[in-house]
Length: 599
Image 1 (cartoon, rainbow, N blue to C red):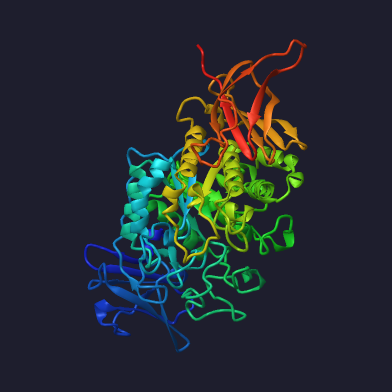
Image 2 (image 1 turned 90 degrees about the vertical axis):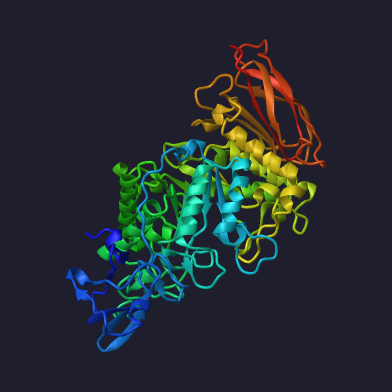
């Protein structure tokens, strides 16, 4: 089996070796700037299993090239599927020096129970002023210090692979080994990863293996062969090719295609030093229609591919992790392979986001289902509470007919009192429910409207809504126990022990081992009603300190500062009752409480 470093254009001390898979070709030539694009000067040698190769002493890094493939007298000029750099999605490949990185010293990605993810889109995240075109990796590097100050310790980057045009979400990959040319170069992205690690931030890259393209796709009928007028050697050529994005599902049963995807996944770790991958829409890798319990449309080769790649990544980098976007509430994605699972570390939690968004954005308090909110807090896929990524905003949830939470709450008035209160209440749930919390770029300073790839973040809101930004900083610090008094938020245990459908108040207890500075209680009010002296149970008697109150005026001058700073829980005289205390909680607000360690 060839390794990825033996495929494509590989510079050596003298010249470059070119290797390409074209099993149906009669002849293959490499043409480029090194031979003045002469069609027949460098004829490649046929090797077993449909591979072709040649050493070209004149070729080196920086040279442009293409493969000239001959099949039954027809000529096809193709971009190298393994090209690390292209001029653009329909331009020439560029020979690039490939460096395998050594394991970095001094940086370890956070454990899943101590991870806070910030999802970002390179094309809109780092834009400065009125610059034309999408923003780039350099602009994102300049914002990393801001993310460090916010408290973020992991960034998830929407797809970086070369796509058609300059504007895109990135889920239409044309060349999965090349960095999008409008974003920068492979060297720039290496600098991004290095700087992120220097600041203590792990890097997760979004990859798309459920389909390729569909436009600007040189893989299509790559060597001239196809069946049923389908995609040829890299794709299914029958009914299994169909995806919501075109007839471009890779052939997961083909050895060379499986290696192509495995090699790409490994590349991000070997050549850039990333820490994790987020796989886009795994449901369409394991099933033609993206469904559970549909054996007739299942893709066993897709399932085994995910298992194999996850295993290969952990062999290469034991601390690596992978996240699935499946959204079908399928616990098998995050089960261990020894139990028949796909072996992902975590998956995006659709049951959480859909339930919580509905509870936040509904107009009528009476329709807020606290039982459903409780189930969203308690839900887990398998054994580990941190097998799920929880959020209220992501690129999917704030587009495709939906908008940011503040915009959904109060359309056209995303900075209204109601929009601020309900969106920050949602933030409390994200950072206090069991799971890996994730926020979407700009969420932390009330970015409004809906996400699209030509609308850069309005960074002026960072100062205009400085209080909301501080609220997110405080939540992140509590979530990561940086003050040493909320360790329970990193623990496995949760109990929703108070749920009142009439008052719309819900409370839950988080802990690892229990006791002072470990046990954390969250009391949340999902109604417009202010409650004074509301009786609530607590896990232990004594003094409980309010570590966070989302109604505090330090977060917004329109907030009411309603609530206690200290609560005293007492055990009633009646035998068998737990410790109880009276709390005051503002409309659409939440309190986070814990005890001091008195020893």
